[in-house]
Length: 166
Image (cartoon, rainbow, N blue to C red; front, side, top):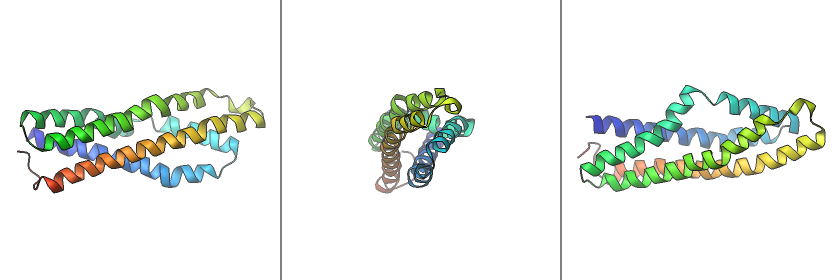
């Protein structure tokens, strides 16, 4: 029973994270891209502060812990799901969590330190240029990794032939 619950929670966390990053890629980032430098930078500061909340961490960090836990549980059962879960775990931990921690978070921290109210138009333009393109590129990478994680998990359910743990 605990094996199935862990797998379910891991899958839900990974899928929720994939949906979040996908929605950023296809709606939030293009919408923000249409804003002036000042409003763009202020908006990203606000979003980056607001996202640091328990519901975000529940899905984002939940997948970091639950996918490997589920993988380990299936390894000990010596079944084919272990390999699917190992692939999903590696994809998520490296491609989503790793990219976020190594790329997006440092950019977010640099943006948070910017004093927008006292900056010149040239500074704002320069800060935006140093933030927006790299951040969006990293978000694309983690979006693809999150979607691939979700696809691996869906494939596991489809190709292993049942929804019960062995």
